[in-house]
Length: 187
Length: 187
DNA sequence: CAGTACTTTCAAGAATCTTTGAAAACATCC
DNA sequence: GGATGTTTTCAAAGATTCTTGAAAGTACTG
Image (cartoon, rainbow over the protein chains, first blue to last red):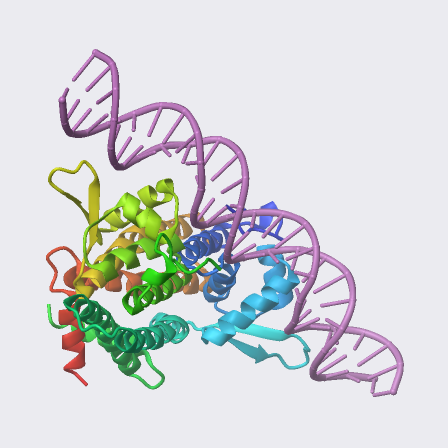
């Protein structure tokens, strides 16, 4: 496990607020890495979120003690997911970055990105797998039928989730918060 | 990337059905590993799901070409998540394992396991972080207030998801399928 | 357009995570 | 209880993924 992300600052400057931010960064990164998000990507995001202001690459490097290259790739990843946006500051050549502050929106963007990158390709692959099994196998055995039924049940459930998520977390969807409220109102 | 999980079988035995199973295993493992599930765990689960019958460790080893030790650890993980169950076969000392076949139930069990292992500890940590920040910092500045507000908004949203998921995917909950139907009926 | 400030790229190295396999533990049978 | 079959453990090896840092690229500025 990596060191705590305290850096640049002298020990005397580390007050409760700074310490609390570090704790948040550590825990968020921990969660991220168990979900397959590189630790440093989660750390940079956590930093931008918890600072709540635009920061430049240098500041991030110093604060988290990671290399320039790593910060660059990490920020690009976060920008691709849409949870961090580039901003410019007048009279300064540097690029600044800030994180989405609305948590429901943040979660929607994360889910949306993963759905695109992972769920959609899987659905396409399952489609192909099903077609191939049907054509390849001349025999129309009970075994084949059961196999196709299994593929179908998986495919159908995932497609249903896919479609539903388009409606709630997709661009211009109703929003994750609405989904949560709807479900809560049924209990 | 690893080889396709064809094994033990001679080339001549590989018919369309077998090939389709392999394809499914490969894609499921692919998805799993991008979500932080070890490839071989996802492979073993995919095999048991798509075969739809109880299998013993030896058969799994041969089919996926993985070591005995790996199969043992993997099956234990899957059993902990509740998506694979041990069974005994009369007149045979071996343990057999079979995968949950209902997809909605399967997805519920996966989400439930991850919530327990990852979301709940994060929530507890955020709680502590918030308390600590409040106590540590003597000053009652606007900055501190904004920081606490950020922690709170994150904590509240995640807790809301946590509670909601208890109701739908928890033991004896209404089921993920019910949640999906409810949401669908609103569109 | 040359100089400067900043960013991106990517091959090599570092760190982390996964798998192996053989020994120990366990369980069942006679 | 001893023999036999089966599972688990875990240190070391192997594989994968992540990070670095220096060089190349880009874009502003005077």
